[in-house]
Length: 279
Image (spheres, helix red, strand yellow):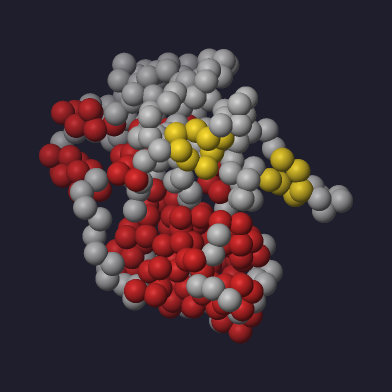
């Protein structure tokens, strides 16, 4: 879940020669669930999480061609209307993707609408061109998953999935991630649950990391066409890139993020805080 997303963010962000971890810059937003490891105080929501403060991918627009500029600008415009999911499915799946890629540290105006991107793909039938024998179509797989997540929440907690707290939502999702669903077994038997989880996480990451706000987060300057790259050796930064500035944080107490399971005792223990830079 959010641990996997943190690993994606670490891999995408690259490396830096800077080893110091200064205090996290404060953007002055409302408090987030993340806390300062030193003081325990809630850290503020930020316009731009990540290790590249002040970096702005959209400042590179003059170096893109018109087709690229148009496409990227569309991604920061008003999200498309939900056309594939019905209202109930959208509520459920919206809560699901919010736990797969949490954005609790972002101010609301700079949160990336992951669900609308998935909905658009399904509505427009943009598929990979193949299908596993033990999987229905992507559209049917998502409808089965939405119904199954909702049934699990009702059976286990007597509430709709989107009204559950963070921890019970993540416990439901972790059981699906582990291919050991806690409920709704008949629904989950209609597909390969491991492939469904891979499809869901892949779609979430594809939508999130196609957005320029996520590029700001990982210090990516956007398409290098037609300009191209200049520094091709020894990991030298491009002139438009900024230095990495790391910071630490503790994940919220009511989340499975930052926990990993030991392989012997079955107990869970806390990892080092702030390894992924953002929650």
